Length: 234
Ligand code: ATP
Image (cartoon, rainbow, N blue to C red; front, side):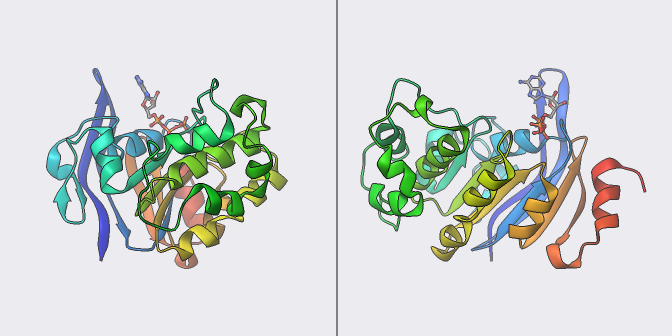
């Protein structure tokens, strides 16, 4: 069953159109990767789904309800959380406080609590009282993912979580994904690191210049298919 669908989704920044009729579907419990070069529209797609950019109501369906025009807090309350590109942690707050921002300090039913996030990323427990900005890039990314999980989302959107991190750190962070999946959450990851995306995703959408140029089950896509959809050349 589809948890989320976009239908003919368009998005513009002023006169500049960034998305041209994007159709994607995320099934319940699925992990989806959105890949594509710089400027393909991946972040714009994430911003549209998470309510940062307003869209036509019926261009985004969540549990079969039109949510395209809802503001970001309403989208979060319905169970869609975003881990934004660049992490966007609060520099004046410590690690624990940054995590608590994810559920506005309320208890939200589900597997994710401060304690279970500390079990997922033990280093965050050690650093819980440190300012978020005192952490390494990889640890900050763990805080951003933990903050997203604190709302116990049915759908977690992760935008470029490996950007700027060393491969060994990326591996540690992606090591948490099987546990996140086990809770039944659906996950959408936006990645420029294609190899990493293909390792974790059930299905992949490739975008170029605001359009989906390829989609399919990860196991069915050849490197040549992906290369062509990513770069537009053979
Ligand atoms: P990246 O990997 O660089 O984040 P992306 O695939 O996420 O790329 P978007 O950030 O969605 O791409 O950008 C899509 C297009 O929209 C690009 O041409 C970009 O220059 C443009 N764009 C993005 N944000 C804005 C903005 N705030 N104002 C104007 N144009 C924008």
